[in-house]
Structures are given as C-alpha cells and as structure tokens.
Amino acid sequence: MNSVAEAEPRALPVLDGTGRAILFTDARTANSFAPTPVTDAELEGAWELAKWPPTAANVQPLRVLYVRTPGGRERLVRHMNDGNKAKTATAPAVAVLALDSQFHEHIPQVLPFRPELRDVFAADDTMRAETMRFSGALQAGYFLLAVRAQGLAAGPMAGFDRDGLDAEFFPDGRWKSILVVNIGHPGASPWFGRLPRLDHSDVIRWA
Amino acid sequence: MNSVAEAEPRALPVLDGTGRAILFTDARTANSFAPTPVTDAELEGAWELAKWPPTAANVQPLRVLYVRTPGGRERLVRHMNDGNKAKTATAPAVAVLALDSQFHEHIPQVLPFRPELRDVFAADDTMRAETMRFSGALQAGYFLLAVRAQGLAAGPMAGFDRDGLDAEFFPDGRWKSILVVNIGHPGASPWFGRLPRLDHSDVIRWA
Image 1 (cartoon, chains in turn red, orange):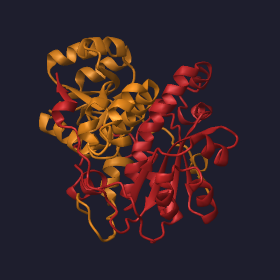
Image 2: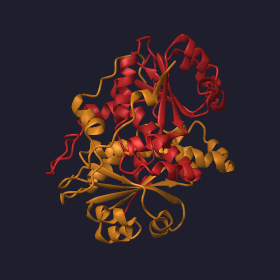
Image 3: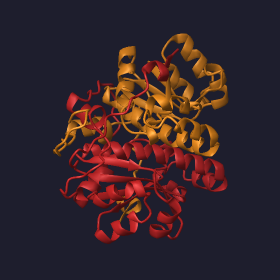
C-alpha cells in the first residue's frame, strides 16, 4: 500500500494475531498504573496514528489535551467524579478528549476542493453539532486503539464534571470535553474480570 | 496479556510497522472494489474483533446488517444518495451500521453487577440517547479498523436516506441506521489523493 493513488488493485495484508491481541482481543481498560513514565513522544505518537482514519467530509473535530505535569493533574482531578479521582491521580498521563465547536473553520484547509462547506456548516447548527459529535466519537474510538498501538493501556472515563473541566482548561469556550482517558503501563491487578459481550445473534443480521 | 485478571504488572507489546500501516498510516477509504468475494466468515470475523474495545457502562449499542445478496443490495442501493449508488452496487459486501434504540434492555446481561441501570436508562430519554450515540459512534470507529484488520478496505458513507433505509430493513423501528460501509478488496484506481490532516499544533495542547 502506498499513501498516494495507485492504478492496480492488490491484496491488502491481514493483521496478525499479535496485532489483534494488542488492539482488540486481549487489550483491557486498565484500572491501575505502574510508575513507569509515559513520554511526550509516546503521546504525540498516539495522535500521529489516530489522525489518519476517516471522518465525515474529513472534518476531524477531535482535540486532545494531554495532562502530565503535577500541577495539571491537580487541576484535572478536582473535576473527576470521586470514583475516578484516584485512578486519574496515579496515571502517568491523561488525555482529555474534546470537540472543537468551531471545527468548520478548518474546512478550507482539510477539504480544499470544497471550501464552501465551511459556510454550509456555519449556517446549520443542527448539522454542525451532529457531524461534530459523530465524527468526534469515531475519532475517540480511533484514539483509544492508537494508545494501545503504542503499548500503553487506556482507561476511558465519562465520569467527570464537564462544565467544571471546560471552565478550568478551555475558558474561551471553543473546546468541549467528551472523555477523559488515563494512559500508562498497567500496574498491580490492573484488570477487572472481563464483562460479557453481546452474542453475534443479538448484533448481526444478514441480507 | 491474558483476558482474565492478573496480579503483576507487565509491559504491553507495541504494534509493529505492518500493523500500523494496515490500520492507520497506509489504510485508505476505497472507492472501487475488485470482484474478489468477501465471505460471511470474514464479516463475522470483523465483528469478533470490533466487539471488544470499551463502551460506556459496557452498553454496546451498535448493530450491523451485512448486505451481500443481489436482492439485499438492490433494496439498499435504492436508498443511497446518487453519488454513492455505483460504489455500493459494486462492493462485494456492505455493512449498515445502526443503533439499537432499546440497547438498555441488554444491561442485566452485559453489566451483571448493576442490572438496575436498565431502569435508569429507561427513565431518562436524554441520557439514553446521548449514551447510545456516543458509544455507538465509538464502536463504529472500532468497526472500521476491524474491517481493515481483516485485510479488507472499508468505505464509510453518510450519504443515504436514513428514514427510507430504516423503513426498508428495520420496519419495527428498533434499529436506526447511522453509517453505510462498503467492504471489499480494492479495485482499479481505488484511492483518491489523501486529504490533509490537521497539524498537531491545531489539535494537541499540553498541561
């Protein structure tokens, strides 16, 4: 595969068992972390992967605040629900995933053959909000798997005070937090027992 | 890594370059498909991967209708926007991703230590809808990468008549379509030129 256009069809490779284990079948949401540091380069590397998979009209509305200084973590933990404070306080790094409510300002850059879509989004609050939420959540899914690709465990949490966190870190109101993700190497007894997944017969239909 | 609890921390493996290329860095949204068939086993295998990454309270609201018979495809193509009809007509398989509006009925099964959450969701339409949309879109992201892990190209499209498609395939009103994904091996000239991604400086902040 090349990242440029190519003329002839060719078979794509299949992900091997180790890759499947890292991203899907063996990966788990960590609930404790080892003191092993996570470097800024590892965190940048996660985004360097997560940025590639598709979004609607290439809008890419997801944003990331990486918190890893003691001062930053203290400001963050304050806004986590009580049950999440200890985990977030001990994770070597934490990502606050947010949506850029003005994502459409970037459209002339990210969709150069259709720059006028910026104004279409600007004029339609409902479409703008729905596109932002859907593509942003798609990207959050990509991000969690990209963190795993870096050999790091991710612990996503929705239990925090969004208004409080946004006022703390995004006071201009442009970014809106959607998920907080603890990131690090798993610590002692990091996993709960795995919860059941729905049967294929509850999920899949055929036509 | 085991899928059961383990007592001691250990380093997690990092995804290798081939795996990164398959899922993130070289993978592309295909716009044409080779006639090579896609088997039902490959499609089941994509879900077998996509089902594992996390959702809020393990709710797993995403559902999949796989369309691969001529009759099924004909019913589907009717509801695609004109610009998407030809692609969907020639893809060896197509996944309609949908949300189960009654996903909370499964909570006693998927969250056995907190079955009462079913009734909490049943009583709060706003929370139920937001959780469904967010976790369903996360799962759509996992699904697209799981299709790629199977050595298949995925072509997600939002351009279709949702009400028409839902009336056609989900007449009882429980499943609501969110995305149609063409699936297959890439055909001739399958890729457009790659669209720009935002700079890290537009996406990432540090604290």
